[in-house]
Amino acid sequence: MDMKTAHYFIAIAEEKSISKAAKRLYLSQPTLSSYLRKLESSVGTPLFYRDKTLSLTPAGEVYLKGVRKIVAINNKMYREIEDICANERALFSVGLMGGKSLHFLSKILPQLYSHYPECTVNVLEGSSLEILGMMREGRLDFCILPIVDQQPSLEYAMLKQEEILLAIPKSNPLSTFESSAPGELPSIPIQRLEEEFFILPGNTTVLRMRLDRYFQQHHFVPKVAAEAPNAFSILNLANSGVAIGFCPQDDTYGSSGICYASLADPLFQELYLIHKKYAYLTKPMRFFSQLVLENKSLL
Image 1 (tube, one colour):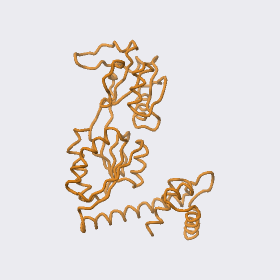
Image 2: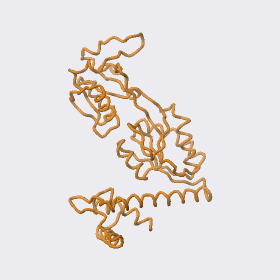
Image 3: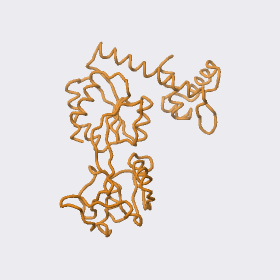
Image 4: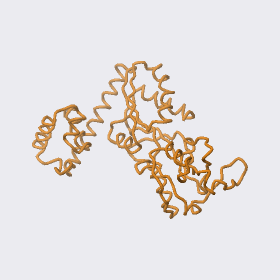
C-alpha cells in the first residue's frame, strides 16, 4: 500500500468530508473523489455511507483499522532505520494544551537540542480531547495531559498530582469559612454548596469530565452560572463575583477578590507524559522522555 494514499483514506475518515480532507491534504476535490471511487471499486464494497457527512461502513471501519496499523508499522520501520543510520536526526511531535505545559517544554527543549542539534520537535496545541484523539490516531508521538481514564493502547508516566480547589468570591459568605488547622485551606463539604452557583469548565475538558464524575458520585447537581474554557477565565469570573469556580491548585493566583478552599472529600487531577504503547522510540525521543521525567518538578 502506498503511504500517501493511506493518509488520503485516514484524512477522509477523520474529516468526514471530501472537501475538508482535500483542503487538509492540499489536493483538489476531484482528485480525492477519484481516489476513493477507485479504492472502493478495488475493495468491492462501499467504505463510506454518503449522507450530509461521510461515515464509515463496517467494511470501512475494518479498512481504517488496517490502514492505521500499516502506517504505524511503516513509521516504526523508518525510525529504526533512523537510529541505525543517523541517530542524531529525528522528527517527532508533542501535543499539549498550552499554558504551563508549553512553558515547561521551552525549558527542556534546549537540553534536547544540545544533545541532538538536528532534531526537530513539532508542537501541537489543542483541547485535551483533541490531543488524545490525535494520540490514538497516531498523529502524535507524545502528549503531556491530564486524563480521566487510562487507555490500554497508551503508555502513561505520571508527572504530578494536584488538588482541584474551590475559588470563592470574597463577596460570598463562604469566604469566611474557617480552616481546621493553622496554615491549611478551609475544607467545605460539597453538600454545603447546594444553593450556590458555579462557573464550570467547558464540556470538552478533562477537568469538566472529572468534576461531572465527582458530582455524580456525591449525588450533587450544580447550579451553573457560566462555563469558561480554562482556569484563567474561571478565576477572572470568580474574581468579579459571578459565582464559585473550580481550579487546579497550580493555576491559582493571589487576588483580593478570591479565597480558596478544599473540598471535604478532596478531588485531584494527575498530569501524564503519554506515548503509544510498544511504539519504537528513537534515541532523541528516549532522551526527550528522560528529560521530561527528570524535570517534572518544573511543572
